[in-house]
Length: 193
Length: 221
Image (cartoon, rainbow over all chains, first blue to last red; front, side, top):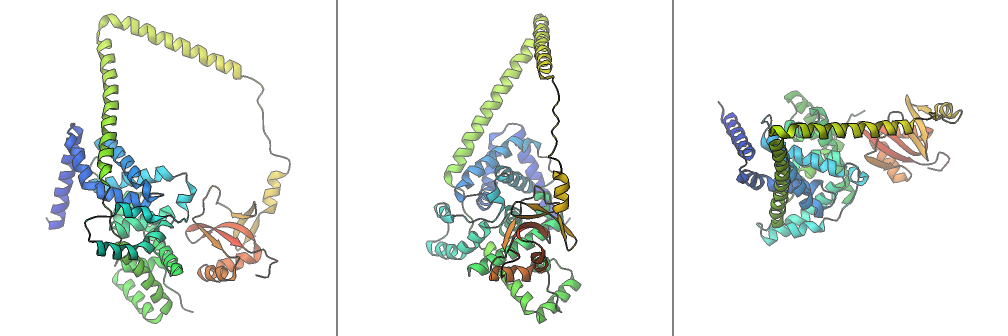
Protein backbone atom coordinates (compact mmCIF):
# COMPACT_ATOMS: atom_id res chain seq x y z
CA UNK A 1 0.00 0.00 0.00
CA UNK A 2 1.40 3.40 -0.99
CA UNK A 3 1.96 6.14 1.59
CA UNK A 4 -0.81 8.29 0.11
CA UNK A 5 -3.35 5.46 0.15
CA UNK A 6 -2.37 4.60 3.74
CA UNK A 7 -2.80 8.23 4.84
CA UNK A 8 -6.19 8.49 3.09
CA UNK A 9 -7.37 5.26 4.71
CA UNK A 10 -6.21 6.44 8.15
CA UNK A 11 -7.91 9.78 7.66
CA UNK A 12 -11.14 8.04 6.54
CA UNK A 13 -11.03 5.88 9.64
CA UNK A 14 -10.54 8.96 11.86
CA UNK A 15 -13.51 10.64 10.12
CA UNK A 16 -15.73 7.62 10.76
CA UNK A 17 -14.69 7.46 14.43
CA UNK A 18 -15.47 11.17 14.87
CA UNK A 19 -18.94 10.74 13.36
CA UNK A 20 -19.57 7.59 15.43
CA UNK A 21 -18.72 9.51 18.62
CA UNK A 22 -21.22 12.21 17.59
CA UNK A 23 -23.91 9.59 16.92
CA UNK A 24 -23.41 8.14 20.37
CA UNK A 25 -23.91 11.58 21.93
CA UNK A 26 -20.30 12.58 22.72
CA UNK A 27 -20.44 16.44 22.74
CA UNK A 28 -16.65 16.61 22.37
CA UNK A 29 -16.95 15.09 18.87
CA UNK A 30 -18.66 18.17 17.46
CA UNK A 31 -16.17 20.45 19.22
CA UNK A 32 -13.35 18.51 17.58
CA UNK A 33 -15.04 18.91 14.21
CA UNK A 34 -15.46 22.64 14.82
CA UNK A 35 -11.77 23.06 15.74
CA UNK A 36 -10.72 21.18 12.63
CA UNK A 37 -13.00 22.83 10.08
CA UNK A 38 -13.89 26.30 11.39
CA UNK A 39 -11.06 28.15 9.54
CA UNK A 40 -12.01 26.36 6.30
CA UNK A 41 -15.75 27.03 6.70
CA UNK A 42 -15.27 30.65 7.77
CA UNK A 43 -12.98 31.46 4.84
CA UNK A 44 -15.34 29.84 2.35
CA UNK A 45 -18.23 31.81 3.84
CA UNK A 46 -16.15 34.98 3.65
CA UNK A 47 -15.59 34.50 -0.09
CA UNK A 48 -19.14 33.42 -0.89
CA UNK A 49 -21.15 35.74 1.41
CA UNK A 50 -22.96 38.72 -0.06
CA UNK A 51 -21.13 40.95 2.43
CA UNK A 52 -18.00 40.01 4.43
CA UNK A 53 -19.90 41.03 7.56
CA UNK A 54 -22.33 38.14 6.87
CA UNK A 55 -19.55 35.53 7.01
CA UNK A 56 -19.81 34.82 10.75
CA UNK A 57 -23.58 34.52 10.59
CA UNK A 58 -23.35 32.26 7.54
CA UNK A 59 -20.68 30.09 9.23
CA UNK A 60 -22.96 29.68 12.23
CA UNK A 61 -25.78 28.50 9.95
CA UNK A 62 -23.39 26.07 8.24
CA UNK A 63 -22.25 24.52 11.53
CA UNK A 64 -25.83 24.14 12.73
CA UNK A 65 -26.65 22.31 9.49
CA UNK A 66 -23.56 20.13 9.93
CA UNK A 67 -24.66 19.30 13.50
CA UNK A 68 -28.15 18.31 12.31
CA UNK A 69 -26.95 16.13 9.43
CA UNK A 70 -23.65 14.77 10.70
CA UNK A 71 -25.30 11.51 11.76
CA UNK A 72 -26.17 10.86 8.10
CA UNK A 73 -22.53 11.00 6.95
CA UNK A 74 -21.81 7.55 5.47
CA UNK A 75 -18.14 7.97 4.63
CA UNK A 76 -18.57 7.70 0.84
CA UNK A 77 -16.42 10.84 0.53
CA UNK A 78 -13.99 12.33 3.00
CA UNK A 79 -15.43 14.34 5.90
CA UNK A 80 -13.68 17.43 4.51
CA UNK A 81 -15.44 17.07 1.14
CA UNK A 82 -18.77 16.50 2.92
CA UNK A 83 -18.31 19.63 5.08
CA UNK A 84 -17.49 21.67 1.97
CA UNK A 85 -20.63 20.35 0.26
CA UNK A 86 -22.85 21.25 3.23
CA UNK A 87 -21.22 24.70 3.44
CA UNK A 88 -21.63 25.42 -0.27
CA UNK A 89 -25.26 24.24 -0.32
CA UNK A 90 -25.92 26.49 2.67
CA UNK A 91 -24.45 29.49 0.81
CA UNK A 92 -26.45 28.65 -2.32
CA UNK A 93 -29.75 28.25 -0.49
CA UNK A 94 -29.23 31.45 1.48
CA UNK A 95 -28.65 33.61 -1.60
CA UNK A 96 -30.49 31.59 -4.26
CA UNK A 97 -33.24 34.14 -4.80
CA UNK A 98 -31.04 37.20 -4.66
CA UNK A 99 -30.29 38.29 -8.19
CA UNK A 100 -27.46 40.63 -7.26
CA UNK A 101 -25.54 37.71 -5.72
CA UNK A 102 -25.65 35.75 -8.97
CA UNK A 103 -24.61 38.62 -11.22
CA UNK A 104 -21.63 40.95 -11.28
CA UNK A 105 -21.45 43.20 -8.26
CA UNK A 106 -19.02 45.15 -6.11
CA UNK A 107 -18.88 45.05 -2.34
CA UNK A 108 -17.01 46.98 0.30
CA UNK A 109 -14.33 44.69 1.78
CA UNK A 110 -13.27 47.00 4.63
CA UNK A 111 -14.95 44.75 7.20
CA UNK A 112 -12.28 42.14 6.49
CA UNK A 113 -9.75 44.21 8.37
CA UNK A 114 -11.57 43.66 11.64
CA UNK A 115 -11.23 39.89 11.21
CA UNK A 116 -7.62 39.89 9.97
CA UNK A 117 -5.40 37.02 11.07
CA UNK A 118 -3.37 38.32 14.02
CA UNK A 119 -0.65 35.67 13.64
CA UNK A 120 1.09 37.66 10.87
CA UNK A 121 3.30 40.63 11.63
CA UNK A 122 1.92 44.11 10.93
CA UNK A 123 4.24 44.69 7.91
CA UNK A 124 3.42 41.34 6.28
CA UNK A 125 -0.18 42.05 6.93
CA UNK A 126 -0.10 45.51 5.30
CA UNK A 127 1.73 44.24 2.20
CA UNK A 128 -0.58 41.28 1.75
CA UNK A 129 -3.60 43.54 2.11
CA UNK A 130 -2.42 45.97 -0.56
CA UNK A 131 -1.75 43.18 -3.04
CA UNK A 132 -4.82 41.18 -2.15
CA UNK A 133 -7.27 44.04 -2.09
CA UNK A 134 -7.60 44.31 -5.87
CA UNK A 135 -7.97 40.56 -6.32
CA UNK A 136 -10.51 40.36 -3.51
CA UNK A 137 -12.56 43.18 -5.01
CA UNK A 138 -12.49 41.56 -8.46
CA UNK A 139 -13.48 38.19 -6.96
CA UNK A 140 -16.57 39.77 -5.39
CA UNK A 141 -17.71 40.90 -8.83
CA UNK A 142 -17.79 37.36 -10.25
CA UNK A 143 -21.17 35.64 -10.58
CA UNK A 144 -21.59 32.98 -7.88
CA UNK A 145 -21.19 29.93 -10.17
CA UNK A 146 -17.77 31.09 -11.40
CA UNK A 147 -16.76 32.40 -7.98
CA UNK A 148 -17.40 29.08 -6.22
CA UNK A 149 -15.32 27.17 -8.82
CA UNK A 150 -12.40 29.61 -8.60
CA UNK A 151 -12.53 29.83 -4.79
CA UNK A 152 -12.50 26.05 -4.38
CA UNK A 153 -9.67 25.60 -6.88
CA UNK A 154 -7.32 28.55 -6.36
CA UNK A 155 -7.96 29.57 -2.75
CA UNK A 156 -8.94 26.28 -1.13
CA UNK A 157 -6.55 24.31 -3.37
CA UNK A 158 -8.97 21.46 -4.15
CA UNK A 159 -8.58 19.12 -7.14
CA UNK A 160 -10.99 19.22 -10.10
CA UNK A 161 -12.39 15.86 -8.99
CA UNK A 162 -13.03 17.07 -5.42
CA UNK A 163 -14.75 20.20 -6.79
CA UNK A 164 -16.96 18.04 -9.02
CA UNK A 165 -18.00 15.98 -5.96
CA UNK A 166 -18.67 19.06 -3.84
CA UNK A 167 -20.59 21.05 -6.45
CA UNK A 168 -22.37 18.07 -8.00
CA UNK A 169 -21.19 19.17 -11.47
CA UNK A 170 -19.56 17.15 -14.25
CA UNK A 171 -15.79 17.37 -14.55
CA UNK A 172 -16.06 19.19 -17.90
CA UNK A 173 -18.33 21.85 -16.40
CA UNK A 174 -15.94 22.30 -13.48
CA UNK A 175 -13.05 22.78 -15.93
CA UNK A 176 -15.03 25.29 -17.92
CA UNK A 177 -16.18 27.29 -14.87
CA UNK A 178 -12.68 27.49 -13.42
CA UNK A 179 -11.29 28.68 -16.79
CA UNK A 180 -14.04 31.23 -17.36
CA UNK A 181 -13.86 32.48 -13.79
CA UNK A 182 -10.10 32.99 -14.10
CA UNK A 183 -10.48 34.69 -17.49
CA UNK A 184 -13.22 36.98 -16.16
CA UNK A 185 -10.99 37.91 -13.23
CA UNK A 186 -8.13 38.60 -15.65
CA UNK A 187 -10.32 41.03 -17.62
CA UNK A 188 -11.51 42.71 -14.40
CA UNK A 189 -7.95 43.16 -13.16
CA UNK A 190 -6.78 44.46 -16.55
CA UNK A 191 -9.62 46.96 -16.60
CA UNK A 192 -8.77 48.07 -13.09
CA UNK A 193 -5.10 48.47 -14.00
CA UNK B 1 -5.38 32.97 -39.92
CA UNK B 2 -4.16 32.29 -36.36
CA UNK B 3 -6.51 30.36 -34.07
CA UNK B 4 -6.01 31.48 -30.51
CA UNK B 5 -5.98 28.93 -27.69
CA UNK B 6 -9.21 28.66 -25.71
CA UNK B 7 -9.37 29.94 -22.12
CA UNK B 8 -10.01 26.38 -21.03
CA UNK B 9 -6.79 25.13 -22.64
CA UNK B 10 -4.79 27.93 -21.03
CA UNK B 11 -6.41 27.29 -17.66
CA UNK B 12 -5.76 23.55 -17.59
CA UNK B 13 -2.23 24.18 -18.90
CA UNK B 14 -1.67 26.30 -15.77
CA UNK B 15 -2.91 23.38 -13.67
CA UNK B 16 -0.59 21.01 -15.54
CA UNK B 17 -3.51 18.85 -16.65
CA UNK B 18 -2.77 18.72 -20.40
CA UNK B 19 -1.36 15.49 -21.75
CA UNK B 20 2.13 15.62 -23.32
CA UNK B 21 1.06 16.03 -26.95
CA UNK B 22 -1.48 18.78 -26.14
CA UNK B 23 1.05 20.54 -23.94
CA UNK B 24 3.71 20.48 -26.68
CA UNK B 25 1.19 21.78 -29.25
CA UNK B 26 0.11 24.61 -26.94
CA UNK B 27 3.68 25.56 -26.08
CA UNK B 28 4.50 25.66 -29.82
CA UNK B 29 1.53 27.98 -30.39
CA UNK B 30 2.49 30.17 -27.42
CA UNK B 31 5.97 30.65 -28.87
CA UNK B 32 4.38 32.28 -31.95
CA UNK B 33 1.32 34.00 -30.51
CA UNK B 34 1.80 37.11 -28.44
CA UNK B 35 -1.93 37.49 -27.69
CA UNK B 36 -2.14 34.01 -26.12
CA UNK B 37 1.08 34.61 -24.18
CA UNK B 38 -0.44 37.82 -22.81
CA UNK B 39 -3.69 36.06 -21.80
CA UNK B 40 -1.76 33.21 -20.18
CA UNK B 41 0.39 35.66 -18.21
CA UNK B 42 -2.75 37.50 -17.08
CA UNK B 43 -4.38 34.27 -15.98
CA UNK B 44 -1.24 33.18 -14.14
CA UNK B 45 -1.23 36.53 -12.34
CA UNK B 46 -4.84 35.89 -11.27
CA UNK B 47 -4.07 32.41 -9.94
CA UNK B 48 -1.06 33.64 -7.97
CA UNK B 49 -3.07 36.54 -6.59
CA UNK B 50 -5.80 34.17 -5.40
CA UNK B 51 -3.30 31.72 -3.89
CA UNK B 52 -1.70 34.54 -1.95
CA UNK B 53 -4.93 35.89 -0.51
CA UNK B 54 -4.62 36.05 3.23
CA UNK B 55 -6.63 33.45 5.13
CA UNK B 56 -8.69 34.98 7.88
CA UNK B 57 -9.05 33.50 11.36
CA UNK B 58 -12.66 32.94 12.45
CA UNK B 59 -13.76 35.62 14.95
CA UNK B 60 -13.56 34.36 18.57
CA UNK B 61 -17.26 34.92 19.19
CA UNK B 62 -18.17 32.43 16.43
CA UNK B 63 -17.39 29.38 18.61
CA UNK B 64 -19.61 30.75 21.41
CA UNK B 65 -22.46 31.51 19.02
CA UNK B 66 -22.27 28.06 17.44
CA UNK B 67 -22.17 26.47 20.92
CA UNK B 68 -25.25 28.45 21.94
CA UNK B 69 -27.16 27.42 18.80
CA UNK B 70 -26.23 23.77 19.38
CA UNK B 71 -27.47 23.91 23.00
CA UNK B 72 -30.80 25.34 21.75
CA UNK B 73 -30.95 22.60 19.12
CA UNK B 74 -30.30 19.92 21.77
CA UNK B 75 -33.05 21.49 23.92
CA UNK B 76 -35.52 21.33 21.01
CA UNK B 77 -34.58 17.70 20.29
CA UNK B 78 -34.97 16.92 24.00
CA UNK B 79 -38.52 18.31 24.03
CA UNK B 80 -39.57 16.19 21.03
CA UNK B 81 -38.00 13.10 22.62
CA UNK B 82 -39.86 13.76 25.91
CA UNK B 83 -43.22 14.09 24.09
CA UNK B 84 -42.55 10.86 22.17
CA UNK B 85 -41.60 9.12 25.42
CA UNK B 86 -44.81 10.28 27.19
CA UNK B 87 -46.99 9.17 24.27
CA UNK B 88 -45.20 5.82 24.21
CA UNK B 89 -45.81 5.37 27.93
CA UNK B 90 -49.53 6.21 27.55
CA UNK B 91 -49.93 3.79 24.67
CA UNK B 92 -48.30 1.05 26.72
CA UNK B 93 -51.22 1.12 29.25
CA UNK B 94 -54.05 -1.22 28.04
CA UNK B 95 -56.73 0.95 29.70
CA UNK B 96 -55.73 3.93 27.53
CA UNK B 97 -56.22 2.15 24.18
CA UNK B 98 -60.05 2.62 23.87
CA UNK B 99 -59.70 6.31 24.81
CA UNK B 100 -56.96 6.80 22.22
CA UNK B 101 -59.03 5.01 19.53
CA UNK B 102 -62.00 7.23 20.37
CA UNK B 103 -59.89 10.41 20.04
CA UNK B 104 -58.49 9.28 16.66
CA UNK B 105 -61.99 8.40 15.36
CA UNK B 106 -63.38 11.78 16.45
CA UNK B 107 -60.49 13.62 14.79
CA UNK B 108 -61.08 11.67 11.55
CA UNK B 109 -64.82 12.51 11.59
CA UNK B 110 -64.13 16.23 12.16
CA UNK B 111 -61.55 16.29 9.35
CA UNK B 112 -63.78 14.49 6.85
CA UNK B 113 -66.70 16.77 7.69
CA UNK B 114 -64.61 19.93 7.26
CA UNK B 115 -63.05 18.65 4.02
CA UNK B 116 -66.46 17.67 2.57
CA UNK B 117 -67.92 21.06 3.52
CA UNK B 118 -65.07 22.89 1.80
CA UNK B 119 -65.45 20.82 -1.39
CA UNK B 120 -69.18 21.46 -1.39
CA UNK B 121 -68.63 25.22 -1.06
CA UNK B 122 -66.02 25.29 -3.80
CA UNK B 123 -68.24 23.51 -6.31
CA UNK B 124 -69.37 25.95 -9.01
CA UNK B 125 -69.12 26.82 -12.67
CA UNK B 126 -65.51 26.32 -13.85
CA UNK B 127 -63.95 29.45 -15.36
CA UNK B 128 -61.83 28.94 -18.47
CA UNK B 129 -59.31 31.69 -19.10
CA UNK B 130 -58.43 32.16 -22.73
CA UNK B 131 -55.72 34.37 -24.17
CA UNK B 132 -56.88 37.35 -26.22
CA UNK B 133 -57.66 36.42 -29.82
CA UNK B 134 -54.57 36.44 -32.01
CA UNK B 135 -52.05 36.92 -29.22
CA UNK B 136 -50.32 33.55 -29.66
CA UNK B 137 -50.16 33.92 -33.43
CA UNK B 138 -48.78 37.42 -33.05
CA UNK B 139 -45.89 36.23 -30.88
CA UNK B 140 -44.91 33.59 -33.44
CA UNK B 141 -45.22 36.07 -36.27
CA UNK B 142 -43.02 38.63 -34.53
CA UNK B 143 -40.18 36.26 -33.63
CA UNK B 144 -37.13 36.63 -35.85
CA UNK B 145 -34.47 34.21 -37.06
CA UNK B 146 -30.88 35.43 -37.16
CA UNK B 147 -27.97 33.15 -38.09
CA UNK B 148 -30.08 30.08 -37.35
CA UNK B 149 -31.14 31.38 -33.91
CA UNK B 150 -34.75 32.29 -33.10
CA UNK B 151 -35.42 35.45 -31.08
CA UNK B 152 -38.74 36.42 -29.56
CA UNK B 153 -39.56 40.04 -28.78
CA UNK B 154 -39.51 41.13 -25.15
CA UNK B 155 -39.87 44.48 -23.49
CA UNK B 156 -37.24 46.76 -25.02
CA UNK B 157 -35.43 44.01 -26.89
CA UNK B 158 -35.26 40.31 -27.76
CA UNK B 159 -34.86 36.97 -26.05
CA UNK B 160 -33.36 33.87 -27.66
CA UNK B 161 -35.49 30.74 -27.79
CA UNK B 162 -34.82 28.57 -24.73
CA UNK B 163 -33.90 31.45 -22.44
CA UNK B 164 -37.22 31.58 -20.57
CA UNK B 165 -36.55 31.95 -16.85
CA UNK B 166 -32.79 32.27 -17.41
CA UNK B 167 -30.90 34.93 -15.49
CA UNK B 168 -27.95 36.20 -17.58
CA UNK B 169 -24.58 36.09 -15.82
CA UNK B 170 -23.08 39.00 -17.73
CA UNK B 171 -24.22 42.24 -19.31
CA UNK B 172 -22.27 43.38 -22.41
CA UNK B 173 -22.81 46.98 -23.43
CA UNK B 174 -22.22 47.55 -27.16
CA UNK B 175 -23.68 51.04 -27.27
CA UNK B 176 -20.26 52.69 -27.02
CA UNK B 177 -17.51 52.33 -29.62
CA UNK B 178 -15.04 50.98 -27.02
CA UNK B 179 -17.52 48.48 -25.62
CA UNK B 180 -18.55 47.33 -29.11
CA UNK B 181 -14.95 46.84 -30.26
CA UNK B 182 -13.99 44.95 -27.11
CA UNK B 183 -16.93 42.56 -27.04
CA UNK B 184 -17.11 42.00 -30.81
CA UNK B 185 -13.44 41.03 -30.74
CA UNK B 186 -14.26 38.47 -28.07
CA UNK B 187 -17.57 37.25 -29.55
CA UNK B 188 -17.51 37.89 -33.36
CA UNK B 189 -21.13 36.70 -33.78
CA UNK B 190 -22.30 39.88 -32.02
CA UNK B 191 -21.47 41.94 -35.10
CA UNK B 192 -23.89 39.93 -37.26
CA UNK B 193 -26.58 40.07 -34.57
CA UNK B 194 -26.27 43.83 -34.15
CA UNK B 195 -27.12 44.24 -37.85
CA UNK B 196 -30.45 42.44 -37.35
CA UNK B 197 -31.49 43.26 -33.77
CA UNK B 198 -31.38 46.13 -31.33
CA UNK B 199 -32.16 46.92 -27.69
CA UNK B 200 -31.56 44.47 -24.83
CA UNK B 201 -31.01 40.96 -26.18
CA UNK B 202 -30.70 37.85 -23.99
CA UNK B 203 -28.75 35.15 -25.84
CA UNK B 204 -26.32 32.29 -25.40
CA UNK B 205 -22.66 32.96 -26.08
CA UNK B 206 -20.43 29.91 -25.84
CA UNK B 207 -21.64 28.31 -22.59
CA UNK B 208 -23.14 31.38 -20.94
CA UNK B 209 -26.45 33.24 -21.06
CA UNK B 210 -25.66 36.92 -21.40
CA UNK B 211 -27.60 40.13 -21.93
CA UNK B 212 -26.27 42.35 -24.71
CA UNK B 213 -27.25 45.99 -25.03
CA UNK B 214 -27.20 46.69 -28.77
CA UNK B 215 -27.32 50.19 -30.25
CA UNK B 216 -30.44 51.28 -32.16
CA UNK B 217 -30.03 50.09 -35.76
CA UNK B 218 -30.57 53.54 -37.20
CA UNK B 219 -28.01 55.13 -34.86
CA UNK B 220 -24.61 56.25 -36.25
CA UNK B 221 -22.89 53.46 -34.25
